[in-house]
Image 1: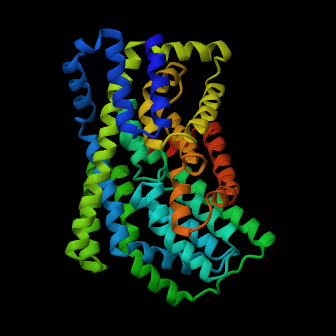
Image 2: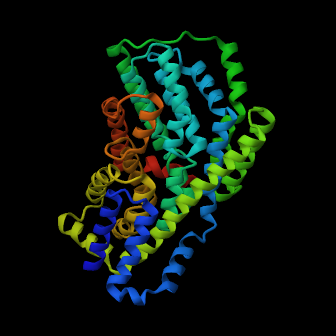
Image 3: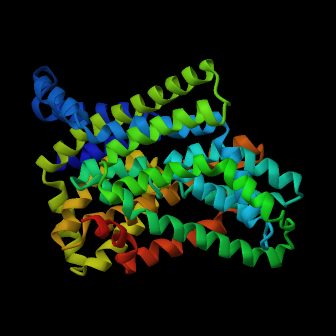
Length: 429
């Protein structure tokens, strides 16, 4: 037990020193065996089996496929089609392009599954459009940061796939559990924009007319079908979550090449390279995390933490609240994928033991961690927006907090009302 605690402390130290997540987790895990068994008696067979066994999963094929879909849509120009359609649909509302920013990000979330992908791709386009329309930078940056956080919640969700594999629950259930919470995140931010529009005197667009709306819908229709194929296929039972990722990848190629025509062979190869690189990083982190989770389980650390929480409260809802607060703090220092890999094997046995649905817990846990992507000191979305918008880091942080608060309200709602997460998965159970 003491050795396992030192393992986690050593891991945190390595991460704070700037060691990459996968290397840090792997190094700390091997060091554990070295200190407990001796460095001349390292169990290489066990280490290898745990590393390979963790990623030897059909479900995990969804991750490179979802990454491929997101990169393909970014490169093909689908994002710009979605933005134009969103502008025609809600650009004339109070808050104009700020409302468009949220809606476009929600639509793009159904393709990318990543907050950083949204911030880097669609975010650059949104910031440029809002600045040209004379929106103040505080609103422009804040809404772009907040809307990017919808990406890891609405399916396809890379974070959801990681959690499902590590928690031993249905990937389809976890993906579908993000549909309503993701929509609620968008609704909460759009309501906030409506409120801020009065206080900050935000500009608004004129309605372009029904003909223009129909034209933009026709242009974006094929891209909009991507999340429909993903979610509809899973709900109807036509294919599993992994198979849906393969179908979405094929669909992305077809519409990028034949419909939008914005993808050369060189750019297609670039998409493949970027997807392979991102997939390799995630898989390496996941493999090392599988070894770490096995060590912590054998050391009975989850049981010790469960007993500690039980000494405070035995209420399932209060336990979830404690974990939510903990996840918000952890999210400030760790990337979502890293935190999921490290904490899921520890926390899931605790919540299952208290009778909490692991799917409900999973989506609340991921939402709390996602807020960390936009909180200092290590929020990746903050760094991406800082670079894309060419503004100081502290300005991005100050601009984002009202939208993070709106997302926080949704986290508390989903925590209190499990059916907000479980209603859609229950349709296919």
